[in-house]
Amino acid sequence: MLIVPFIKVGEFNFEDDYNTIKNSIKLNFKEDILEVINKKYPRIYIEDLDLMINFNEDFKSVRFFEFFKDAQELIYKDINIISESYKAIKKIIQESDPNVIVNESGLETETLGIKIARASKERGYSDEIESVLIGSKDYISEEEIDLNDLYKSITGEDYPT
Image (cartoon, rainbow, N blue to C red; front, side, top):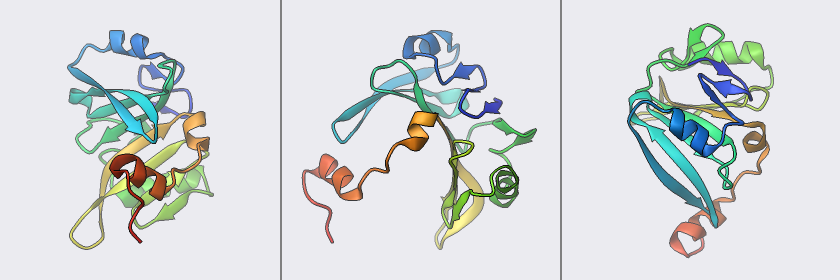
């Protein structure tokens, strides 16, 4: 699937609504709702693609696409980033966005709307990709969720300090 930042991933457009995407899927899929701090985000998981499509609460557009490590093909700049090493992908992304944020667990580029998480290992992280998230402009510009708020929404208690 070809990544066109902020426009589409493969045949799925960020502006497509839930039913448009659901009705276009020819493979096995599962539907559910992700609840985060009093918000409910509908999702579709396409098993054969190892792809989770997360929608906005109103079902009218895609928040982000997230591919996991068993995905077969995810193309950016003629490179299958799901099968490349983290080092190789980091170099390609840094060429496209010199302001990319890189840390031990992965990288994030607001310019391209891409977040890449490295696979963890017993001590640190491996050179393999765990997941690739391709976000909409709205998703990328959302404020980060406060850890205490997230913990409290799940457990009903403040995050232990």
